[in-house]
Every structure is written in structure tokens, then in C-alpha cells.
Image (cartoon, rainbow, N blue to C red):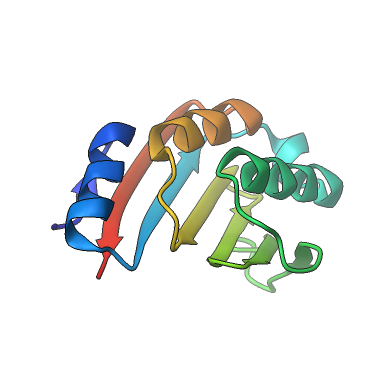
Length: 136
């Protein structure tokens, strides 16, 4: 299946996984006009990662890594990674523009819509763009 922008029904995702023996599902979520205090707080970002992994029912491998860096103010902020037994959760939080860029790749199907809604709510984003892609 081609890259899909926007939302995709979870029942469709599960059906496609079963019928085509997918390797995994990848969701990219871009959040804009986020709450500055949340995207610039390492503990809140760690909390988000743990809760996302619980929501999509994947087992975390170790603790989330959250590191702040960037000499260029346009892109400086926290980046995070979380290894999961079925792949990876990652993201970058651009503090100057109050934007967050998240990527969730799992070999197990998950409800991408619920994940997008949760991310938008958690970071208090005013706008959200997403892309969903099956991995074969």
C-alpha cells in the first residue's frame, strides 16, 4: 500500500496486516504550535514515550533516551529515542517553532489514529499532519 496522509481506520490496518503479512507499520506525526513548556521538558517527553508504548501495547527495551542539542536555533531542542521489541519510537522537538516531529515504527499493528490524537492532546498542538505507511 502506498503512503497515506491523514487517518486510517484501525480495522483496515489489522485486516491489511493479516492479508498481506506486513512487516510493520510506520506513522510520522508532525505537530505544530505545541505547548512550549511541554516540548522543552525532558521528563514530560519521557512520560509521553512510556505512555505511547503502553497505548500501542509494545514492550520497551530499556529507558527512553532524551537529549537536548542543536547549535542552530531553528532546530535546537530535545530528541528522543525508545527502542521497542518490535522496532523504534523517535522524535525531535523544535523549541523555537514549538513543533514536534514523531516517528513510530512497529512490527505489530496499532491504532495510528488514537496515537495521533493522543500526541496532539499531550503536546497541546494546534495542528497535526500525519503519514501512515505499511512496511513490507
